[in-house]
Structures are given as structure tokens and as C-alpha cells.
Image 1: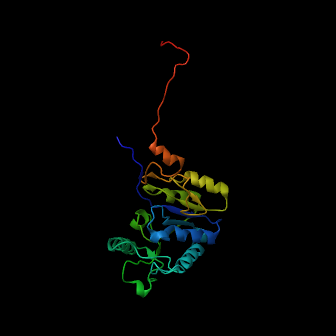
Image 2: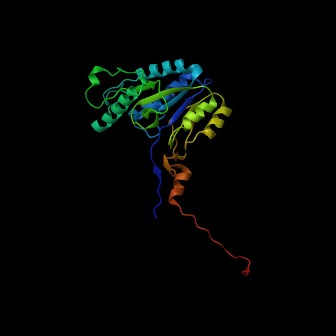
Image 3: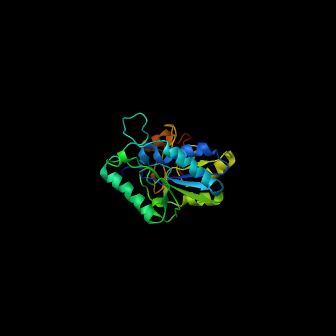
Length: 242
């Protein structure tokens, strides 16, 4: 019998409540779906925003994304470089096509500079008018593609966040620490970031629930994967068997 520690992907949610710091949330949301060209198992690509701030948040997220250009990887100003292969860019572009075909709107459609239309470059996509049944909402894309949905209250936010076969990472933004801890407890994920996304510490365990895998890496919990538990019984009182 072999012990296994498996991390098998995710489709992580990022919740933005109306009492959050909007600029902070938008900047972390941008990093959460574009870092490493979106090739991140914990990428927070399902962005759930309270309806009262939806338009303002979307404008802020789009503005930040457009300020971080696609470019050659060796240029200092470049934020998004190319994807790793033709097969990978074909996969990402197919999901973008499917999203549009299903009725979602890419709010950044056409933002790719003409000089990068050759090669494995792909521009970020921020989809709205998304339904939870769509593949771009449910499946891991592994590229810089995010979906942005509205919710009315905390219960709906948690329901949408948990509406996934995955449970790897998650993030939430609020300035109410009691709400943060309450929502964090209700989210079905191995990790929850409060007022950030995808920051890490080697002392903190990494891993998920549901179909995101079994076991943990990093931290004390990660070391336990390499241990066996042994029980040793010592009769120190010369107790006789009954």
C-alpha cells in the first residue's frame, strides 16, 4: 500500500462583499486570475461580487487588468508573457470561444495588441452574463480567464462559492472580521484567504477537499504524510489479564 498526497486542481471562488476595500479587492482579484498567465491551480477565477458594488468593482478590475500589458517575457514592463505551448493556447482559446457561444460576454474582448497576435500570447478575459451551468464557470481553464457574477447576500455568496466539484482555494473580502471568519468556516475549501488571494507561507498547510485532492503539503500537516503512527502499550503495574 502506498500513501498518496494528491492536489488535483481547482476552480476557486473570490467573494467581494459591499463592505470591502474596493481597490484592495480589485487588485488582489486581478492577481488571483492572471498570476503566472493564469496557470495556477489555486487561481481565484470565479469572482462573486455583491450586487450593490458590482459595476464599480468590475470597472476597477478592468482598469487594473488593462494597465498590466501582455508582452515579451524579457521586457521589464511585461506582466503577462506567452503560454507554454500551442496545445495550451488552443485549450484556453477554446474556452473563450465556448463562453461566448454560451452567451457570456468578454468585457476585454479585442484588447490584445496586434504585435502579439502571433505566438502563444493570450489576452486576459473577464466574462460577465455568466450562468453557473456554463463550462467557463465550472471547469479549470488554466489561463487568464475570470468570470464575474453577482450575489445579493451572504447565503447566496456561500452557495455560489460551494457550487463546484472542487474545493482547493478561496478568497473573501470584507472589513468585518466576524463576517470573514463566519464565511470562511462555511466555504468548502482547504484554504481561505481573507482580504488577499494566493499569498502563501511554507509553514501553512496547502491542499484541498472534494475533488481537489487528498492530503496536505507544507507545514506540520505536510510532514505528517511521511510519518506512521505507532501505538505502544506498556503494562507498568504487572496487571493480570482478566
